[in-house]
Image (spheres, rainbow, N blue to C red):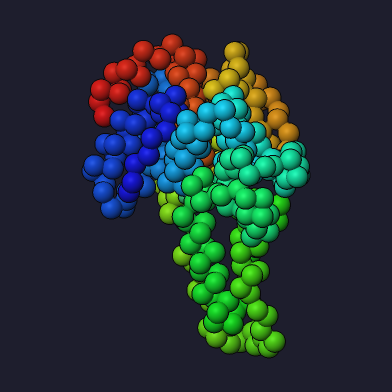
Length: 335
Ligand code: SF4
């Protein structure tokens, strides 16, 4: 698979070494057991697959290149590029402005755009209506379109299905950028069938299992593999508005205490953790989240839009709780 140039601050030397090693010994991705990082009093089980996917790395590479190539120009992103607060904040710090929030609420009116502006389409893609609007303003988005090829694959699949006279039902969060974009592209192709016979499923249901991308598949299967390990708790790192990360949390919390955090700073002094409850959509603080006995066994993973550097930060914070952070350098050499 193609490799991308993403800012070094998002990488983690330890995690890069682990992923490289796991890839070398398991080229066909058959082994979903987690990687054990044995710190003595702390056993960390790192999921076989986690972190930046193809689509996210592609989007980050294009977005930072856009900034480099367009000094002095106004650069807009239609909405958050991916659902990670650090990456989005970094882009804003480089002068990139977001036109809509994650739910489609307008922050900067489209009316203020001129043909001289640069507009980046996020990894989720955008609606046909927005594409047409940008074209009508003379803004060319082809060069700075970060739509994930796996999202486009779903659009193409919907086109094929529609041409075969199937009705398209999209399962997703209605306000999510990707759902809205997919709905718009699918709606341009969809036609309603006028009869439905529930008994005749093969005739009436198209096979769409290939619309779940490889990264979502791998990360979820890796969590299932990780959950085979007897453990005390799980920590999932990622943006709180990230759907794929929330689903990893759901899988873990069905089995053991699970803490959803967006950075290492959420691990507080005195064995406390400030974590997000995505059911109530609020952060809460839990005291004594790490049990008193040793070794404590922790499962650790992250969503497809989470930089490995954030996960390394979490590993460091947990190791510091036991005074074993020095072991990380040793571990990096092992892999
Ligand atoms: S999670 Fe899948 S569809 Fe979404 S950006 Fe990554 S590779 Fe693309």
